[in-house]
Image (cartoon, rainbow, N blue to C red; front, side):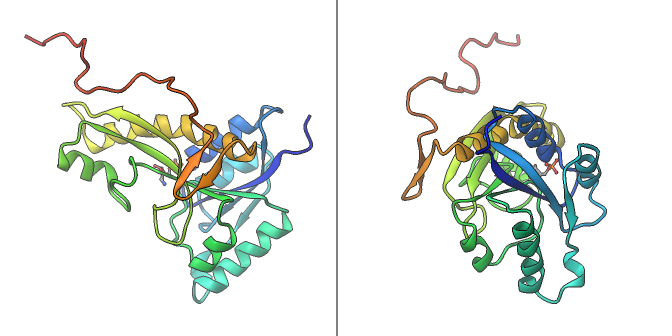
Length: 224
Ligand code: GRF
């Protein structure tokens, strides 16, 4: 086993399906990141149970008992240091972080967002995409910077928007792709294969090797 695996903390607030996809990827010994801690701001987050069942260290730092974000983040920082964390993956972590915390972790903290950034920053991304009538939607993994949902993009996946879609069906198709790209993005960052140049993350896609996603598909049969 390599001893250079980057010690990674996953920060969650809820069910933790993205966390589970990262845990599953990191079970392979040649994966360059090791999930060393799952931390939640909600002591009752279902994802914590999953982490415990998989013998991963967990911590709950309940934001409600701290006065102000700084003291809450100071305790999180202590936990991260105690577990000698190199990288952070935010995975459905529903607290805004202060500029000083994000700057401290700049280039070492990733987030998954359920939209093709820079479109649809913030909440209710699927509802907004449907309301706008876009034909292609998706998800993004990016580095975290002080401005919300705005850091350099590491990976994206696109899905077609179907005529029959509701916010729920669209969300579940996007979520399936989140589970594909988040482990991939962590792998790229933890192995040191990508670097940031300006606002671009380079090294992840050196060649043309993908078919374009065209909606409606060019070979689609007409429905009578
Ligand atoms: C995901 O849709 C993610 O993109 C967003 O919050 C949701 C978390 O879901 N940031 P889960 O807890 O990973 O299942």
